Amino acid sequence: SAVISQKPSRDICQRGTSLTIQCQVDSQVTMMFWYRQQPGQSLTLIATANQGSEATYESGFVIDKFPISRPNLTFSTLTVSNMSPEDSSIYLCSGGQGADIQYFGAGTRLSVL
Amino acid sequence: SQELEQSPQSLIVQEGKNLTINCTSSKTLYGLYWYKQKYGEGLIFLMMLQKGGEEKSHEKITAKLDEKKQQSSLHITASQPSHAGIYLCGADTRSNTGKLIFGQGTTLQVKP
Image (cartoon, rainbow over all chains, first blue to last red; front, top):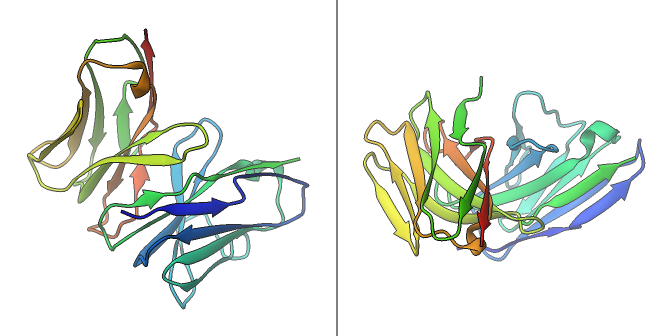
């Protein structure tokens, strides 16, 4: 199994600012993903964080808005840029070995004023 | 329409009763995951199913994947207040990529 830690656990931000969320895995994983859970909704995949290369984004998500880094096999960051109230969501990262079990962090609860 | 339909949306049961949550897809499921979500704890992994007809159990929770690999059920026997939470099914529909789509979730309340 993998234990995934996310920081911060929650934040309240002003419109127009950016927030970087960190995701640390306690063991090396081949796959890391970022998801968004909007209020009252289920999880939606934002992107695949690729180690050493640009992230792969799902339809509706772009790099300028959600830049992602993954410098190694245990760490990734997601930045939510130029935030608006519509970005208020829970952001979760997940990790696993290939298509094996995907473990999730506790999430970052973001509120944008 | 939702790619992964989960039902029911909410469930209130008396402690000790059995219950079933269903998850249905129009696409073949290469992997079907069940998670439980509690406030501030993210998603807690329960079970993963990959083979048609597969069934797994852990404590009082049993999950099944049908032969066609398009429908799964999660069954809780003799429910307890500790089972309360939001149950989410997640599915890999893109041939073992690890990328998951999720159902809308089932909110379970267990009355003592």
